[in-house]
Length: 289
Image (cartoon, rainbow, N blue to C red; front, top):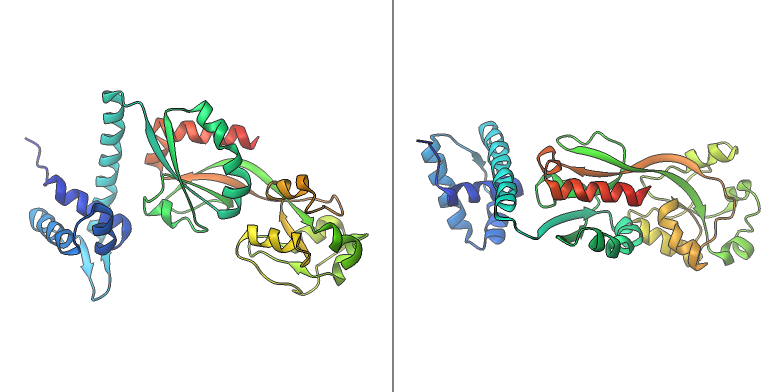
């Protein structure tokens, strides 16, 4: 006989541990926080082990709780996969967390092709700049720009990226008169914390950039919109600039590109073993190429 704790208590524990909150677990499971607390207390009594450290305004997993959560989540994932395979369920749902600009300017236009290639997979998309949704299990796959490793997660490269300088046609001709890269020293440089103007200036052979002279944006789409409005010259990833360049709302005045980091599909090792996740990652890699 297997020694298995009550399933409702395990479900409450997994949600609370993944979300880091009894309240958020209650909201997800459509229960009261009191019900979540009672179920977890019952599980701790059954296990004769404390799973959470309870503080006045927060809860955190104990070392035993973290180890148990990893095992429970892995078991739930395997049950889900086996159920789909055995039951021949025709549709799967994948939750994707993507950076806002990448989602709007690159991923969204690709979705009709994905639906045609994988009609049995439904997608739920959300935006975030950090990988917390993936780490907490709220998303199955994250799509991010950066450089691995990401602790506790596995990354699959989608494509290398290049940094380009763009501005509005009016700003190029009448605003800053951008004829050569040196002219950028007198321009308003729009900035993003992940994109390094120094790397582009070195690629252009004109040394270091001037001191910060323009606004800093934490969202690449807002940066692109500011550049299209004539605010200044923006350093941006080439793939994100493509729709604006095609529409003529932005121009690339110098044709100089600097190599930089890459886009990755990021997920837990367990999620990457799921057939639908593997299919999604392979499709993303093909589209990125």
